[in-house]
Every structure is written in structure tokens, then in C-alpha cells.
Length: 262
Image (cartoon, rainbow, N blue to C red; front, side):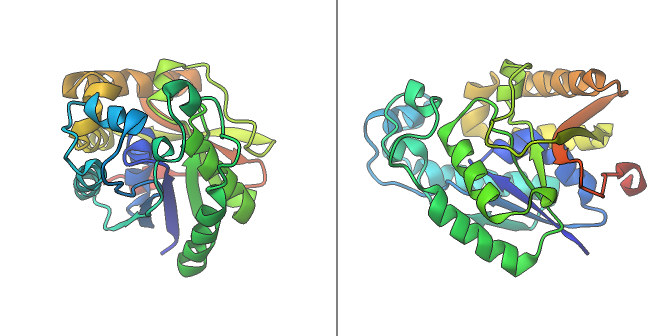
């Protein structure tokens, strides 16, 4: 079977953004769910510590270990068995000292994309994926931009589907993809059947440490994701619910999920 590689900057990005596509592909594809920035950093301080405590998580808790466990629970819910957690530290541990810095682009001297690109090249050599899913960079988060940079360095443009970073796409529906993306991209859709959307929401709620901060709790997670995916379908003149993504005009393959309906 062909392989689809889902690249997530953080432990929830791909889940919130494109878990429906992950579910849609499972009938005929092998799925790998790989998250880049998952390294545990002991004794965090400053802004890095605030990113933990503002979610009501005590300072002595291994925050990233907790989040990795949530990611495994998400994978169980959506049925993904190949889960990879790479040991790169999130931006607040790399000199980004405030929310303003975090969303102001890549900091001078931060070249973490280089070892990420090397690791990614090895993974691609290992599994030879037919398609790779990566974020568009909505929200301009430094870690998302670093992953985009790494992908552009080692992956052919025709292999990549660029997903809409969520919940940034919910907060700013008119947000534009990062200029780091290739030109001549066209927008595509993954229709979401009800049972896929229900499982996506259940998977999103596995990230208990995040959904209060990101969405406002489990009920709001369900409401906002349903409203967002309905709006995504309507925006492209489709019925029901949908996820959307960008691909090059040269990409000869288009997602036909109806044949995978179960």
C-alpha cells in the first residue's frame, strides 16, 4: 500500500487540522503520524514555563511526556499505529521569550530546520511516502515555519499537500499561507462523512491539556470544529463538511474518498 506521511509541528497540529484526511486515507494507505517538536526539557523557566502553567499544569509535571501520551491516545482513537515523536525542543526553549516573538517569524540564528531536514530526509528514504502532509503556516508560528522550511529543502513540491493550520484557520478564516510555500498551488478538499468527523472530534479531545486553551473545552471543540468544517465545505461550494489543503497543479493524484467509505 502507498504511505501518507502526516507531519505535525506540535503534539496536536495535524490532529486538529487534518485528522479527517488521515481517516479518509486509512482504507487504502499506510499512515505515519510524525510530530517534530516533542522534546522534554527539565526545569523550564520564563515563557516556556508559562506555556505550561497557563494551562493549569504544575511546574513539576513533565509537560511534553504528558502531551506525548495524549498523542498516543489520539492515534488509538483514529486508528493510526505508526506514531513518531522527534526530540526537537519547542520554540519557547530556543530563545523565543514571548507570544509576540513566537508569531513574528523565525528568530535570527535559529536554524533548527537543518537537523529537522536531515531527519526528514532519512524518514523519507525509509518509507518512500506517496504523499506528505505539512502545515501552510497560518498564524506564522516559528515552529510551523521551521517545518515548512525543512520540507521545502528535501521534498519535491508535487509530493506535498499543505493543510490549513487549525485552530489558527478558525480564528482567522482569511489568513494566507506562508510565502515559504511553493507557488502555483490549487485548493483541494477532503469531504468528511459524519462518522469521520465524529472520530476527528473525539481524537481532538484526547489532547486534554490543550483543548481548554485552544477551543474552550470539549463541547466547544466539537461545536467549533463542526462549524469550521461546514464553512470550509461551503467556501468551496461543497455539501456537508470538509477539510481543505493545497497541492501543486502538477500533482496527478486527487483524493477520492467516497470509494473508501465504510
